[in-house]
Every structure is written in structure tokens, then in C-alpha cells.
Image 1 (spheres, rainbow, N blue to C red):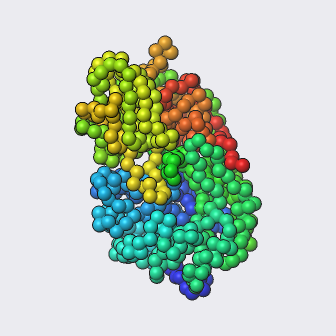
Image 2: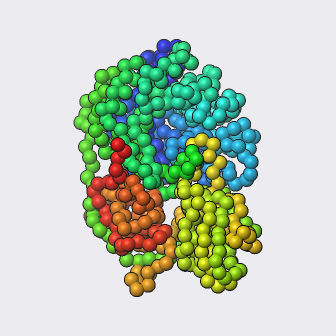
Length: 584
């Protein structure tokens, strides 16, 4: 029974000295048929542990629901880790950050007014209690104290960067114990936040990517005895739309790992394997300006987005071997990739022509937020009538996050939260013209006070200084595209406004591939109904990762939602990714 103990001189496992050498691997960012492969590569690196967050918002998309199926089958992931001889650090939140939509907090927490997230607000703690009550019972047999792989559980996540209410952390610790967690608890914070984010009686750990000696010194000053651990050793970074691709030199990162291990510290490498923000799951940051995170979560990690070892993998394996046993087995090689080439998208279906099949309208005096509509991801379509012909000025108090504006189906402009844009002028062709505003949730803020991030049109929305008498608000989650009816694309009459474009291609042997969208502007992609994620011509990312298990032998289908107008009818399946220009 792998029982972890926190002793004055360090970790002990089954009463023997133990150093945690872990890597971050988020099951929800990896196709479930690839979990075993990634875990095997973790073991071959020399890791004895893997770490994963748990995204509350995916497991509980609606209050009262809870999912542990398919790609959310956390018990299966934990059993696969155990089969590789790996221990697990479990980080259930309730808040996880992770550059994940809303930091993992479910959007339905924001449906009402006034709830304070990450606080002792009784409404929030009740919801957390329900979450843990659903999550933990299936996991209890997998705790180390029951013979399972989970040796420790994290309490909250970098709370010191958000608040300083020790009572809140104590409440969470009590809930974890009440729901049966019998393994050690730990907190993690950046060195400057260790005091605010810690709880007496719970092991503190630090997060940093450099200045190793200083980080460990700050941790030891606050915690004079016990294990030293860096719970997030940052070896890369995430990307945002409109920025450059982040990278870190393998030798530089390996040298800092060497310093950590030489100091006798335990470590969790963030990330061992980043994976992908499939579908609509990317998060965002807002430190005065809203910035949306890209689809790829490659993170310049030890395994790239497709799970292949990088130069950093080899450098880290060499360092780990100086301090801990490394399996005497061959280093994994790059898996074969599919380079199919161009695929023509021959059919199309307009978004506006199918809205009645994709969502139901709710009529009210003001636009309803996405959360009020019971929606988590996707789009909201707002419509109203304009009484007068002539020049008009639309003023939206708060656009969350990108609004495309149409009059009688014709595009008249875009308002972007990122650009702090609130007003748009256009011409109304006739009395009673239809004003349509398609608002995209580009990812809820995942860090800092901005996590109370409701989506849609917030506040007052005015036309020529007056509020329209009535709005229709329609949730378009786009989680089921089967109602769409496609017709052959007619070059003499191309679609106006957002449209779905579909094509087919043949595969003899499925393999990982990368979808390039040169000539396309912005939108989302599905392959065989699997939501790959967002694309945007502003980059840096210009290909989307297509996992091999998504493909099938024979005929395959690609569906692209283009929000503007493509300059081409083809996409390209390539054997290599393009994540953009790397930061200097």
C-alpha cells in the first residue's frame, strides 16, 4: 500500500525516504485512447509520479449532473497510471487555473448575481460540497491509503495570488476530509504568495520556473522542516492569439532541474505533456486587456502536442538519471504522421439559416447573458428590430467577447473586447430591419479577480441612445451539428455571414495529423464530429492537431465553421505542426 508520509526530513513512502519526480499530464487535454501512451512515456522518462488537475466545469456541465465517462473517465486514467507503476498527485480544485476555461469553475455558478467565487460564500461552498460529493466516492478506492496510486491531493490552487482567507482554505480541507480523502494535502503558490496561500498543518509547496535557489529558500524560511517541493516547475509557457509562440531552451530548463534535484527537492514538471484545448475549452487572461489563449497547449513541454519526445525530454531524462533510477529501455521515437494533403470542402450550410435547429430563442427586454441561458461554451445570437431607417449607432456597454453585427443578414462590423470596442456605426436600410449580433465566448478568464466572467452582451445595449423594446437571445452551444443540412457550394452564390463548410477525405491507416487553414479567417473545426478547437488567422498557431483516434479507416468528414468568408475552398492535412514564430 503506497502510503505517503510527510516527515521532518522529507517525504516517506511505505516508511522509506522518497522523492517525488512528477510531470503534469491533464487527462482532459488528451484523447482517452492516447492516455496509456503518454503515461508509458512518463515512466520511460524516469518519472515516478504524474500530476493532473480535475476540471469541475467539464465533469458538471449543469448543476446536478456529473460525468465520469469517455474522456472524463478519471478512474480509468488513474488505473492506467497505476498499471505503469506511477503515483498520482491529484489537483481537484475547485479552482484549477490551468489556462482552462474559467479556471475550471462551472459557468452555472455565474447564472445568478452576487456569488463570490473562491470564498466562504455559503452558496459557493454548497456547490463545492456537491462537486466533491460526486467526484470523490469513485476515487476513494484509488487513494494510496486504499492501495491506489493517488498519494496526495492539492487544496485549492495558488490561492495566495487571489485571496488570503485562511478560513476558506480550512473549509475546503474539512470538506475533502469529510468526503473521505485520507492522503496528505498540500497547497502550491508562487514564492511571494506562500504566506497568503497556505494553511497551517498542510504542506506548502512552491511554483517557479527559474531562480531555483531563491524559490527554495523562500519556501524553507516559511516551512523550516519537511519536504521541499516545486509543484509547478515551469519549463515553457502558453500562447495567446495575436502573440508569438512561447518557448524555452532545453539546456536552460534542464540546468534548473538539475539545481532542484541537487538541492534534494521534489518536483512536478509543468508541463510534461500539455495536450490541446479541444472544442471551446481554452481560457483567457485579463490584466487590463482581455487576451484569449490559443487551442494548442503544447507549452513547449517534454512531449509535444502530438505526444512525441522533444529535445527537452532527452535533456531532462539525462538529468533525472543522475539522481533517480531511469528505466533501461529505449527512448520513444516520433510516431508516424499522416500527410494527406488538400481536402476540398464541397458543401456548405449557413449558420443563420439553421439557428432554429441549433437553439431556442428567449425573449426579454434586455439581452440575456450566456449563463442566464444555461449555456457554458459557444455563441449567443441576439436579435431585435430597428424602427427607423437611416444612420444608426450601436453602443454596447460590455461585449464578452467578440460581437459580429449584421443588419438584415449583411455584416456591418465587429466589436472586440480585446480592443476595448463598444460602438459601431452603420446604415439601416428600412424601418423594421433586423439587427443581429453574434457574440462568441472566446474563453472565460482563468486567473485573478476577472474569473467572475459572464459572457454575451452585458449591461445596456443602445441603438441611437435608446434601448430596443425587446431582444431575442438564443444560445448556440454547437455541441451537436447533426441538425445541419448541407448543400453543394455554389460559387455564383457564396454564403453571406457565418457558414459551415464540409468536405470528405479517405484514410488508409489513421495516424496523427495537423490541419492547416490557410485562407480561412476565424472559426472552429470538427473532424468526424470531434471538436478540434478554434482557429484564427492572426496566429501564432496556424495548424490544429488531429489525434489519430479521431480518424477512421475509409471515409472521414471535416466541418469548418467560418465566421467571416474564406478565400479558398480547401484545407490541408499535414505531417507537421505550425505553432507560429517563437518568441525571441
